[in-house]
Image (cartoon, rainbow, N blue to C red; front, side, top):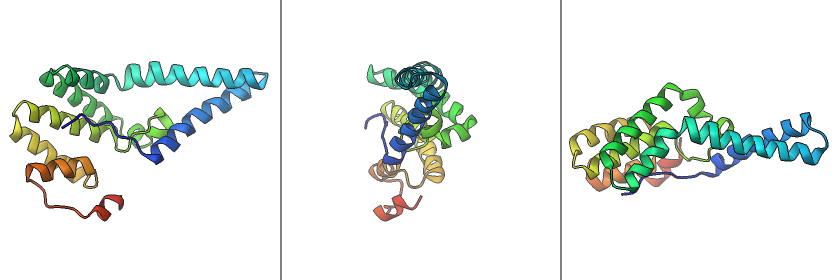
Length: 167
């Protein structure tokens, strides 16, 4: 089991919308056009690097790093903090492509919960992990990695692949 970080076409298009809007704003306020494009690209890079990755997604980034180095207990706590943040900021999470420039296929709160489950399973905390997985499947029944994990653990009836795309 790996920590989840998938992409989607709709997310990529949304993130390009964020990039394009900052380019457009740069062209509107900075002349000549080439300088405006450069200003917009720099604004996007700073926004993504400092605001989104540095502040908003810091818990998830920290959790992925901790999971990579084998500190699954700390990673599970980092993913729990990330999940709490994105549940509180649900509107931003819903429009993450346009607002954050993030191309993720699933809501960030759902990915944080899935990653927390994976970390718990590596620590043999199966009872807690299964409770979280049940809640995740109720909130995101079409999240294919969560359904596959539940099927692998034998705790969820198989779903037709067509149902995954009904969301």
